[in-house]
Length: 526
Ligand SMILES: NC(=O)C1=CN([C@@H]2O[C@H](COP(=O)(O)OP(=O)(O)OC[C@H]3O[C@@H](n4cnc5c(N)ncnc54)[C@H](O)[C@@H]3O)[C@@H](O)[C@H]2O)[C@@H](O)CC1
Ligand SMILES: [K+]
Image 1 (cartoon, rainbow, N blue to C red):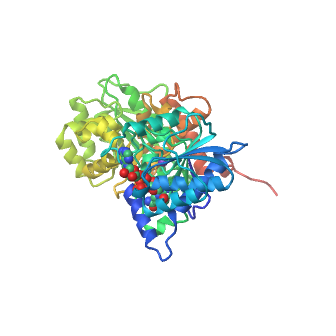
Image 2: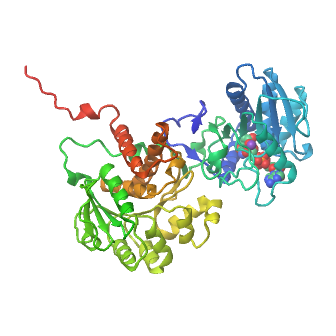
Image 3: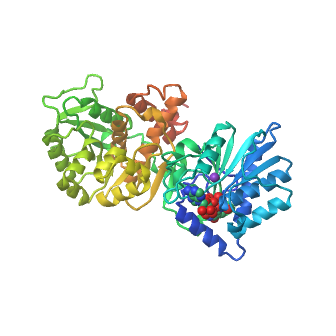
């Protein structure tokens, strides 16, 4: 969950930016070169002290353990310690750095702490109890690739976690990589993370989703949007406003909402194509055709007769399709790759999922056809599919999801979602969106087919490929969250339920409370 600090100007109702470590450093340099440079460390420490006081040190809880590390994250912690001490809290401060090696700001913070009557400990005292912990060990300067944690830090972090106290992490939970969200070694499990200046990618994906707790953005009174142009954004309700389809005109017909063609459903995998088809139908496509690869396929779907079932060759003869979704249950037989090749050569917008991605990874000529497409394509790989496309292994993709998504978009000339905890959407203009919705209920068979069908529905209704991608990803996760909220998951959540939940949410988002009244005929005789 992400919460804005109350001082964030101009961000409410607008997409919230996310900054890489390099971008945060650039903002910091620009701030320092201002005529009256703001005291960022002082502001960060004060904001953190307020957050601790208002959220963790309540109802008579008055003692806090502050962990101050060797860099500026430690400096923030020392400032927070001073404010909390001055406000009357009992503060025990552990400092793991070397005073002589601190930056000027952090040195000032340390001297001010000592001048305020504070003490520094080398280790956590054994016989003292606290109500809360402030984690200022490491922030965005942590470099685990170069220096793995030594035993001292590993043990400190494990001790803090084992104390089972509420933890406020400063900037980022110590042990987490700010850019990749990986935590290869010990990592603080925070209750709240106060993210300074802006959100970092690592808080929103991979291991980050497990260890940040509630995130509070403290912008330190900087109007970051005026300093640099962000390329990354949070995919939340603010971001999808401009993606929603318009309310339907009263005088409408099915031709106005497009026709989706779904190519897949090889023998034994017809269910995948059906799920994609039902998602396309129930998220608003005017017509949905399933082009089934299976020999002697069904001619009608008795439980969803609105779906129009065709042998796959006949699908390509239809002249009124608005878009194609290729992949759900496609398989990797020769017919599948011939159909994919045909689809890649059509001028229709495409969604490529599952085996369509595996075939592209396996056959260079398909990859070449994809790269040279002139109309938009969306890909929906998970880590294993992304690894095949980039000829690497899934662990490497997970280690740096950001770079993997960027490479896929560039290499294949596509917009895409790299699925997983904190799905990452990459647009062809280089902008990235970090999804905030979804839960482990989505880790079940068929949910990917539903996602690609939803994208087809939105393309058919005239959304751009970027809008269709972002809306589908956020809505898909939100639908799962709504099911979880009603105890229909995460255990046992099914893909079909996600479709119905998504339909309900989409109508609420588009119409608010006025869907029923909007189309009611109101006639009276005077
Ligand atoms: N950039 C900014 O604009 C601001 C930064 N601030 C704080 O400063 C932090 C960044 O400060 P720093 O760049 O000093 O970085 P950190 O304080 O995150 O860490 C750097 C220190 O950790 C050590 N270190 C790195 N990897 C290690 C490892 N694996 N094992 C042991 N030691 C390791 C380094 O030698 C260095 O001493 C931010 O996260 C934030 O908390 C705030 O004061 C507000 C403003
Ligand atoms: K920290």
